[in-house]
Image (cartoon, rainbow, N blue to C red; front, side, top):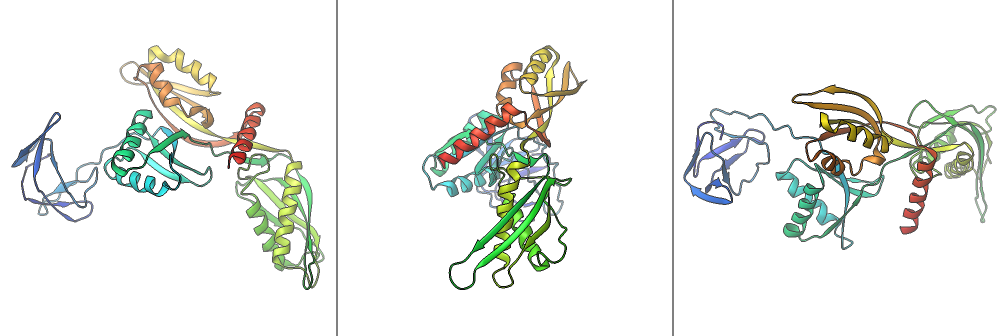
Length: 368
């Protein structure tokens, strides 16, 4: 209670939704005990059951004098794991259960990430995620398993290559014929940059969109580990067609054949996501933190003094190395450290790490 008093059967307005909520039985919270009471006044902590349209951080107020309390600023989530059901086919129950739990606990997030084909649950640490899993089992009857969240990598090429794609199919009646020559080279934009330099009508203009569509579908899967291809410029500069057998499907397929031929020969590499880390720690743990960042391939950016003998260390760290940082930081600082990390950019992955990523992708594909 922030002001006034609330009594049983009083009607209050939710200032976020405008809906009216009826105060049923009011409970006074005393440790583990809930004691029935007829009213609570300013400064009391009370509870009301069976509110129909009220969520965490909402304000209930007198309709004649509406007041909205400032929302609580919760810390960003910093620990993510993939969550999956023990019994296949219960993914929808997980989504529905977490959706219900998120109505009362706004400090965690969950998303279905189609790129890594995982359901990602994020919170403040491993303890919170374990509690959420227990609630899923107790309240919604679904047992789940937590596993490391996969990292969303990217792929790109480092040199130019001129590729040839030719699709010819004849099976009685009308056939299919598409023939393209495409120059692949590193681009300036993350999205595909498609250009054409066709002279003399060797490829009719009405087939250009089909070529581009074939390439856009192809770049969704790179040639090294199957991650999306970025920063790619593709220039259609030559080809040929058949006046009867050529169609959009044939040229789309020819473009995909050129992609599969050319990209492996254009020096492809894997890019890994880099995060900007800000970790707040007591001065006494500075040495341990800096040593740990070095082991995680981190690059320190600087440090600044905070209040009460704390320091804020900023660094850029590969996201691959940060999956267990919430647990490790708690151990290193006896629970006195905190951090935030936000995606910054993609950068080239070192050779040994790239080989590991490719092997992991192969193992995952074999498992599927």
